[in-house]
Length: 282
Image (cartoon, rainbow, N blue to C red; front, side, top):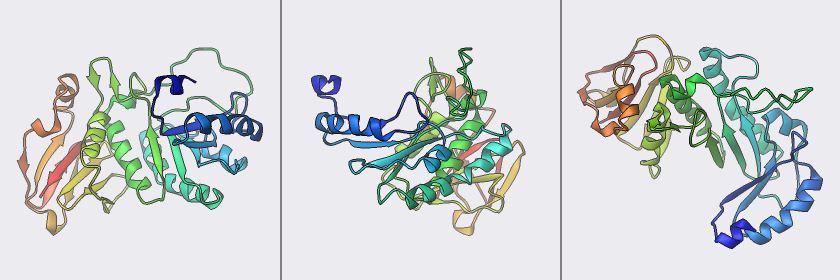
């Protein structure tokens, strides 16, 4: 009713249950017809507001559904940086498995977060009001983690993905401060008409990235080590702008643009300090 009254354009609607870890057939029978009447152009999906496991155990199906959806977080069993990176290499398998029982419907992931937003397996309610944000949300590691996630998901037939929240300690902007991941999203969205390809590196748990179009490369150090990364011959003598511990705070607080960073000329390699991001251009 609100959408119809304000003539809002809604592209995607996800239907979930308050009392269940997956969308029930009862809820779908009650919700789908009026939703499609109000927002005929929207893609209406269902599945789970919890982990992929819940969708895999309770495979939601309805003739009127347009897509299936589930959320992802890397901190169910382990919480260190290395484990968070390792978890990303399992994300494509969840998409492929979901497609195997989606009856041709596309797959959405919404949202991807650092921590569980709620625990579908809890035996009693948690009213403690504990903030489930993660300090890594506003870190260089967080920005690199996003790149690694995208690097894995672009290899799949995933239709759509939502990351985090927009504003606050679980978002990409908090108060007047831009988190480092903001600049990753900004960079990629400015180039969304380009083709994206996965960068193949010698140690995918230490570094990775995305090839953007024919002439640009986003390179990320996921580790707390300083790395010297040797470039393919076609990328020798590239220009690079680096975001690292020395300049990231100024970038975040002054809301500068990556394009305003100093440009370095490379030879055959690039040195990235811990968790640094590098934006290369031929």
